Image (cartoon, rainbow, N blue to C red; front, side, top):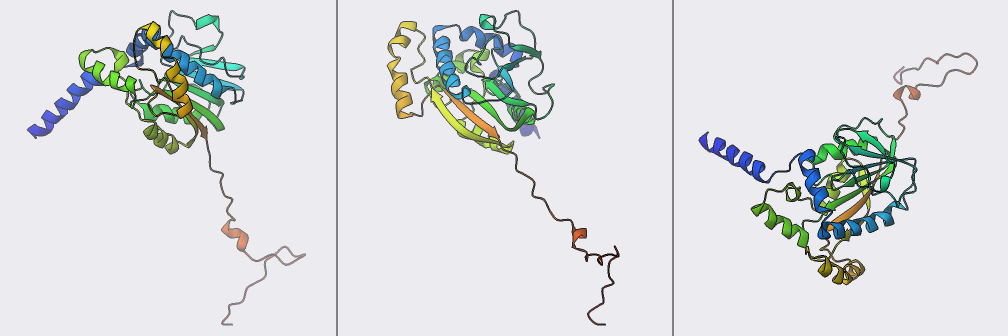
Length: 275
């Protein structure tokens, strides 16, 4: 009994020290990091990757959900009606004054009808979610059949992932306290909520160096990393399509009854074989 209490205390202590924090605490730190030379280079590669995928996805309604709600990640999309979801209103406006329709809502419970959205973008939201399964279920609920989900997440098997493992030992910054979601694990989760991955890509192959000049000189690493499809990119992008199995019509049992006698509208009496 004492050992179980001790283990419980250890788990609580580890979660308190290393667990994922709330969106409200994580978002400002991530937004500040994206303005550093390393974060800006990271974001630039993500924008380029998103633009390639979004230009081929069509529909009427797009929902963007990002850990940095002030970003606009949708310029590559041709969809006209775009919604930016955030759990609370920030003092910052969307960059460039782009008019995405704001929606103040919890990510885990969207005030949107089921099967009403054509495209959803999750930008590092699963990384910083305390309930990633519930978030995926909610996204699947609002997507129309054959609708698409685009996920951007940190790759734990990369130089950036190693940096995160080391940094979280020496600092309590919310930036480093995110989920460690492998791409293969996330693909398994998607299939459980009727989302079938159709495309995947990695990006940011440069080492996580903070010096802007060094990052610029190492930009050639990105070209070779993409060309060779190396597995060590700092982030991954997954495009999934909502696949809903069609119902197979079953013939009711009462349709097997004998046909009525023509002209009478009544069923004939059936004789038993032993008669």
